[in-house]
Image (cartoon, rainbow, N blue to C red):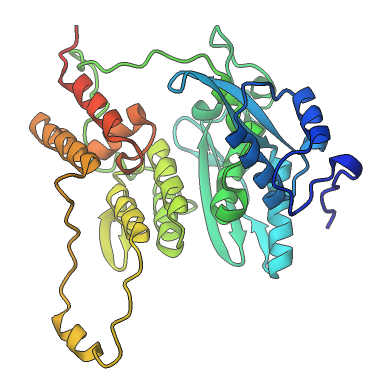
Length: 375
């Protein structure tokens, strides 16, 4: 296997290095990292290059600055290419003595039909890639609409206009690799995934559903949420997601699975977990909370029998002072009054993350918008 070529001389990054040298800093500034970058972002970037083994001076990994309206400053995000992901993955399995493989890439059209080769002139609706690490499957689906790069007039630009099928497949592969190698690829995204970050920001607002318009928060009818769980027996994305969430011990993987399931409209799909039928969204939330809880400590020697006799189902009681829990409770109470059956899935597009991952202020901001009548 061809390994990454590391820069030598004054630019070589040492494993024990804790800060960028003046020579390295000068080259990084020439690569586009300006004075807006923070010391924390630079320190994190150094740690990431040491952990991944990617060379920033050969443009294998780099920092890209984008204006963040919430933070009111330019935020720098590490990026690599899909080739960088592949090199890291091959290096990890070689060191661990594991195996790495892929199932055939699939593309989906707007009608939900899957193809093993994309020959149509228009862009596919989605692509699916399954990474197989040491016999365990890590499936991921990327929707074209979520990653496509557009200009100011909404026109598709760059490689997304020339090779939409290839670019969508690369995004799906990046998602699958990140699930298969969460520790090795955490904190760095591919350029293919991040191209959409430069799209002009759309207007985002909440309003009431107009007469004759479908309610986007309505509970899916029979089969709506499960339509893609089995297509000609070849693909079961909802069950695949549940299977991966049930075998991983990494909470970040479960969070990624939730985001993927939401993007595919699968949160309401029925999956089988330990011979029990559950909604995928509810299962992923429960699984994430399960992995977030610390493992119970072992009972003192000689007290095992007594402890076993007194064990009851544990109930986590949230303290009254827990502002986040209070905000979530307020939102759920409003949802119950308004007839919103799945507030977790409904709030996701507006908050950009599951309720557990956002602040109490963000949740209350959404609640205020929901309570404000549309003009």
